[in-house]
Length: 207
Image 1 (tube, helix red, strand yellow):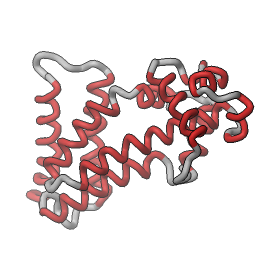
Image 2 (image 1 turned 90 degrees about the vertical axis):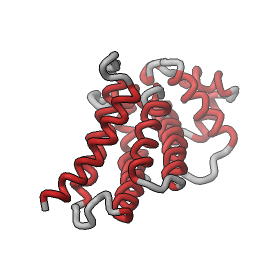
Image 3 (image 1 turned 60 degrees about the horizontal axis):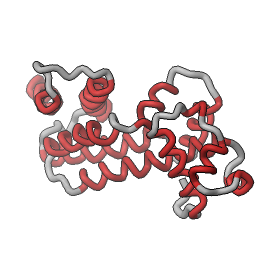
């Protein structure tokens, strides 16, 4: 995403995100819905974007960048891997799982459609959505190795597998409504945090 966006582009992006957060299906959003919400004429919108798909795709990417910047800012101020893991789990709970953008993107994964193609094309221009995730994982890995929680010789692939397994488990737990009396959110986060750390510790003990 380019660094400087015009006020009209920002207005269009905000309009798209508002519609998605109101749970309007991505595929059913019309250009007129977006421009009407943004207070901008359709002709003006097409001066910036070639299609509805491009407009929606770039709005989702813009929203995702803002979202990930929040957790990056928190992680840079957190001084232990344990607290960083908790911060990511809190972020998944308060930001990602409640975001309609996140849930609609999950639905797109199994579909073949123009919107998915545009998203992938736009993401590819700056490294894809995985680049944001990789940045988060890199901060955790560096902190863990610096403090000795993660063995210095543990391959990054293994570190990534451990962290992603824990974080994705919590995301699915929230999306699927798996919370019960026996597995409330706070205890589930503590369980995942403990087991992520134990995975690194047990690996070190086996060497």
